[in-house]
Image: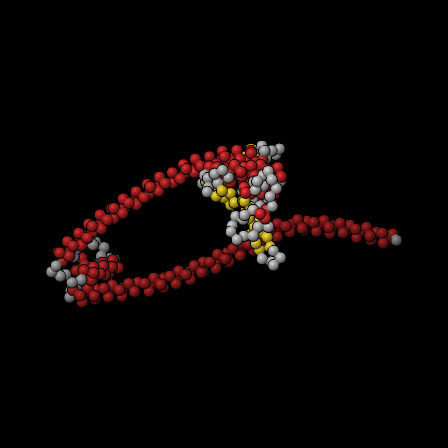
Length: 349
């Protein structure tokens, strides 16, 4: 046991020595790993640079070959131009001709043969367009000059008319803006009154909205029914939105009366108190506008002058029933079957 214990202590010392050596080795290994990584990155970068330089060298060699071909083509083109000049002008030395003729007007024609070619082509095109010059060319020029003067006068008239139209359009836009502002102010005032009457209190107003670019975008309604806070139309209940819409309709008709108006179940979402105020306003509206109302509300039916109903008989055929309430005396009992129908031939039951 003592021998094993001594051996164990010796082995523990060796383990500690090896651990210390391992730590030193790991500490020395980290810089070496960084150096190896840096060397590998440098090798890769140098390899990429070498490959890029090789590709650039190949590209330049191809460009050099292309430039050589361009030089040969240019030389061939110069030779061809010289030959054409010699053939067309019957001149042995085209270079002397180019130098001696109009050198001050075309100082670079000797060096830029493309310019020479374009100038020659331009002059040929002009000669082709001129064509054959007849004897009456002076009369034709005067005639065309007179027509040109006439067209210039017409063009000036059209431009003046266009300027006048633009001024008129500007005035029209300004008039439309003023009329809109006046009408909007009147409708907003009438809407506030109609809203207060229909709701039995509260306030509401019309506001102009703008789009993202600052231009007029539309009209919004901000309402405050009795007992509620000021809020947008979208936050109101269904009945409140319907009554607000009716208030806006009455305001528009008050500012700009219409011969007749058709209301399709606008009182469907209203309670009894709102129906009473609605029919009172409708009766006031009927003094100037004929109102045609589609409704299932008995409170609204009570103020009608003439009633029309659709019913289905036992034979499955729909029938139109009509009744003029002004023909019914208020102080005696009358059988409705004894009253005349509004439309001839329509049965009343």
